[in-house]
Image 1 (tube, rainbow, N blue to C red):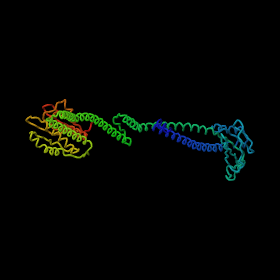
Image 2: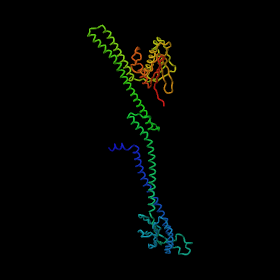
Image 3: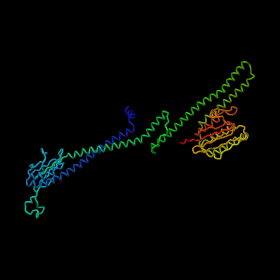
Image 4: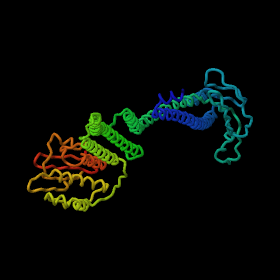
Length: 487
């Protein structure tokens, strides 16, 4: 249930954003903690360095007041030091560790004194809110001897402990700096996070927009609606996927259109076939009834004639079935796609019709512009053979009789044609002539299936066929092969 809920309610884009936001938050926390540690180390180091310098300076300033035991002078000397914001208190002690002066209200924190008087040693104790720095104040007794500063060597000076200086350095400014750093770092992290999330959102939108289009288009195809080709924004993997999807969509649409066309043709075909096959059956049934009645009456004279009618109907039905099988085989026999020398093929067909052309005094003109074409040689041969035969059959009795086979060259699709100057076709019948078993003149030979076969072969070559004709002025059958659409 949880997985199903997640799949329905959290999109790929939102999952990525959620993961990146969590990761960004963790990085921000780590960065802030690390920055605080570094900043604290720097501030502590600076404060300790400042404490050492300030305490040593205070010891120098307090040396004379401590020797002279002049409290007023001592207060005056250290008043400037008290203005340093980090100093919370300044205290001076004499050599007996008695507090002389305390520049702070209240009680000083407890601390121990260093017993090593023979050297200057800085002692630091850390409390909760401050650093407590203690430094001994020494003086040289050589100043009591006249001329000592002019003649006495440096190593003969004797140092004497005369007191202590104790200064407290507050940690408040470190804590304030840390708070400021936390706020600054948080704001910077938030700013970069928002910018990063915005940029990521834009990138994800760019990436997922084609995927969303593909998903919507796939749903539409599932529902039977075929969208236009989807735009290809980039030449990357998603672009390749989109191009492949467009080709798949076009192929499915083409196949569905073809399937719908075939279904319509099948309905029409079923109607025509049932009608044409029913006719000889009715003839046979009718004559069998007549024969039965005559036999009962004892009248046998007309039986041979009736049997001839029945045989003729059976032969007609056999022919119809044979042609029907021939049409059905077109769709399922192997398609041999090859390069064909069209002019040579038509010249070979011309030899087949040499006798009927001569008998009817018909000239056959083959265009020299006919060159090579790609297709199934046997099937295209049948196309030209049927069209030429059709022209011979309906040539008429005019003095000058001509059949022309040629090509109209175009940039996109070449148009091939078979033209005659025969009797022509009435416009109202021009759409019907490609229907199966359709014969405009019942006196002519054949089952009315030749043009149906021609149309099917042209369609197998991804082309189309149509006729332009006027009664008494001949007919022109045009067709294309491997037709492509241009925008």
